[in-house]
Length: 480
Image (cartoon, rainbow, N blue to C red; front, side, top):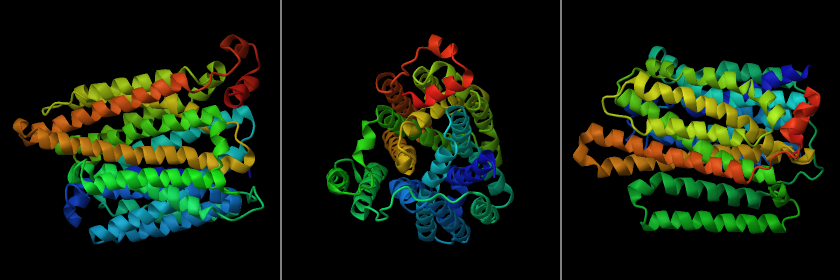
């Protein structure tokens, strides 16, 4: 089977993972009403998925290296499909949240295995560059497409079909992957997972997100919140100590000696923190303030995947010509400009004046940013650790998103509560505005990291231009 057919199959698997991180956003008001969620608990429909997804990604990435990438992809995808069916049948808030958490764990087995298959299938510079460009489109465009599809399904079929739709697609892709994707032998003879390390890092990340999620309700200086922050820090220190002493660590700390791997992961977290908050807050603003229907909300996001798709398919050639660094500065600056525009939303807003300009600029910046970040995070990594590298960048993406959603939801709640003199609607919109300002700061941090940590390829643009196109692309990805 050709490399690109393999890519299509694993990309569909990744698309499903990303889709389920966002497809429920448009349906949240309906789910809240029908299952009687409270205003503070409804975010857990999204957070439960993202939290376990991000928390178990390192374990999933390492398992792909140790037990075989295709095997872990098939196990994860089968479980993901089954849990999607059960979620659609949920009738209580607890059942829905628990099943969403289990679905996130399944996704954590799928995503690093899928990206690792791409990295080992496309070993040449130009092809890998192009594949990562399309992967960026799938990974980020899926979030925006999820909003549109979620609106259509919620309005015409009911919110449960946001999950039922995964069932036939999931089983067909499982069969296709089992038949057409080549087996990937495990990269190491040792097949014991570092379970102590997995438990330590997962519980540390979960404690951190839980602390940020509940801080606005419990109080930032309350004993439970301070205890969670202390637990997160202590568990992370214990994890690092365990990894430094283990003969077969979950995360060999030597991987962080690769400068661009470290820099790219540090960049990805604040970028995704801002993006998760964007989809969450803009969705609630359009439905709660502008009174958009679910399908109209989905259609309102349509420019996002269109512009992102156009940019993502062209950025590989630009990276091959000019290298990483300039795009990891220009891209975040454009995203920050869009966030700044959204931070001025009024109570009597207009989609075309107050939202659309940002939805034109932000995906352009994302398209310029994500492919270089993904390439930097996975280049120069030994074959035996490609699953780990995939797990790391996915962990940075999902945990950044989970933390961002928790922090920005807390900002909205806190600012709204403190702005009662503006009236209910005015206070709510003021909370959204402040959340977008915080998102802008996240992106500025990413831009600074891109300017100071990501290493510019040694070859100057003029030297790159004198080389054949294939060599330029190879150097842009590998010579960092």
